[in-house]
Image (cartoon, rainbow, N blue to C red; front, side, top):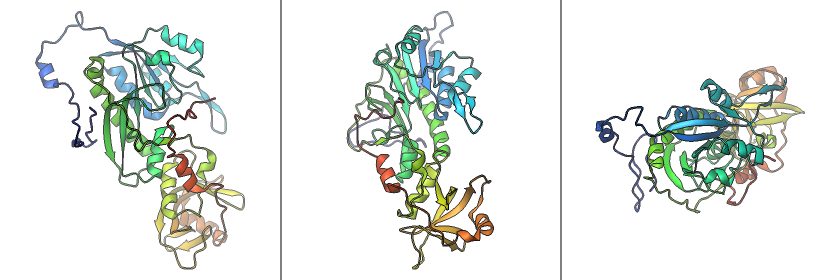
Length: 376
């Protein structure tokens, strides 16, 4: 059965289930310690990952006494920023710091890329924040392929589970450790750790928090998995949702939606795609926001003065612009922006083509067969 302990360590038990308990480590410590000469061979492991969420996980995996990381597979460097500087993924940076071999195939399923990996004779694959589907040949290794996913599966499968949880206003999220199958985040669950949300999290902060939890979850359950002590539990289809990659257009703040949803969007869409409005062709990025009550004469889509500074009137409530960044400018308070540009009061912003509600729906669409997250 699945471990349902929370990040705070308090057990949560279903009425008809009991969590697996890891082996008794104190009893194990009392056993005679194996010497280097008679210690079992470490498991040859390939790690697949690219983003920041995967960095602590790779570090814990490489330090695990049962594991020999024979290669790290990550996305190739790509141009970043206005100067288009070739930049390695966060995982490649960590891998090189650990003196691990790095492979950077554009497409993992290409025969040459797969041959390079299989030539290393791995017995296990561990994946986190990678972004491509894994070929069947890697799923069928002796110890299979394990995936650490930052949500409580089956909720928020797919590419953007952390922004999706914040945008949806979830009161709880977590990390799921699963054995991968041919589907998209549909494999059976080995362990789950629950994390309560306060309702003020940003995507970068929550990602960092869940990454540490994921690294610990893997470290605790890896030995029992390798020893064959765990029978993974199939995911239920109840409550299954699928997230998709975010696009620049998803950053538009739509005043036809309630201020509460837009405030969640601001936190969810940091750093990409951000949240913004267009004022006479100039983009104003909103870095932090809060919600205040509407006035009776508020017209949704227009900037209004608020005793705390500058606000955007919406369909329900005002979105107070706590911190903004004008095009080509530096971050500043909404109040400071208003002092410099008092003419924005009464100006209207355009609505999003689909609105934040449609974007939220796209992040929570039930579609177990979707494969859209894989790069072309």
